[in-house]
Amino acid sequence: MEEAVVSLYYKAKLFMDAEYSIEYGHFYTNELFNGDHQAGIKKLRMVTQNLETNHQSYSLCVLIDNYNAPVISENVQDFWQNLRQNEALPHYWAYEGDLSHYVEITLDQLHPKTKKEYLAYIEHHQHIPCSLFIIIWYYLRLGIIEDTEKVIEKISPTDTTFSAKNLITILPKRFEQVEDIALRAIKRGRHKDIGQRITLIFF
Image (cartoon, rainbow, N blue to C red; front, top):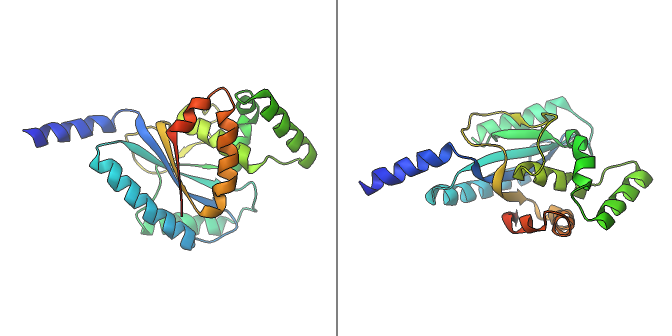
């Protein structure tokens, strides 16, 4: 009887908003599938196994960076093919460049000083910094800003939503500094409390 109740509980959770949004890779459109992506998948399996053991729902997402790298369509196709072969396709994905639609609305959520610094950087370099893209990505994944421009694509079946109550981000250690910059900016902004709902895992 107890097992039946647990089973029904878990099935019910799958039809609710995702408790966790898990990102497990950052792919540049000019690179090939490599050891970092394999390592990210390995970490992902450990994380999802733990969530499933605790009957917690989740959705998987990947961000493809076409903003800081030239698009090589063959490489993108290779990336998807390797994820399929590793049984690690995400439920949702987006191109990083498309997140630029949400720069203005995201800046309005940040501390005025932080907003001013970002605007100065963008004006001077004519380039959106990576940390701002990370903030936009976090806000979308947490449902703080709505995907009105429909930049999020669904690639595999799931009953869980893209946005979630909590985030888990799994990335190579070389991304740690820029992720920290983004997190500190968030904690100074209007939604400072969401920092407690973001878990970063580096390898």
